[in-house]
Image (tube, rainbow, N blue to C red):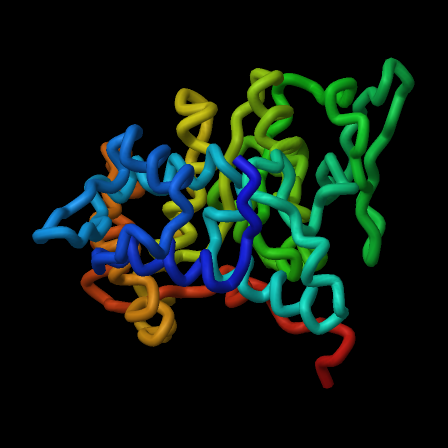
Length: 297
């Protein structure tokens, strides 16, 4: 399907995902037929008029993921489209069906960082990754990037956390005991399928460090965990219940309708979902970044 991603299309898809009806004539016929065939939406007829309604939110999200990974995050996609429009490049936005996200079409890889050093190989040659404040390494030839099998991989959702990985105090030491000196941090952005494809190729354990809100959990479940279910988990700090008390209620309210059916059979993660719903707040992972010690008096 050659369907251009536009702000209007995103609004229509979000309307469906939020449980509201959408006139059949307003959605591309091929896209509508695909979503109906997959059981994501259903047609509702009233006389000669036909509207579309959501049938299964999880199937709907999975369909969008298969069409284009960028469609898993409407807010990020809107921001990207607006940036493209402001630069007079709106007509160059990729079509649906493109396997890469909007900002990463030329960056089919991912970035890595570390606390200390990790001995790896890249295309058969030795590569030692060392902790160098203010820098990190971009891995383009990820299919030939090898790391020790006992190295723990921590996926960092937010670039600010990834950039300032050394300013998280003892967060990782407390939560990831036994791996303190054997952690490789990876960034999910720029968005592409490269990181996920690499994770599927290797045996290493993976821990996801993202926002503590419904959208952050959905990203983990639908974009990571379902592909490596036996060796992936979500980082849940011991103090998250207290942190949620000062989280964002606006964020929760904005996400609620889209993710109100979110659930999982992963017990610790379901407990986190209940905590978020009880608090009616979400907490940004940036809250775990400690102040710059060089600025203290």
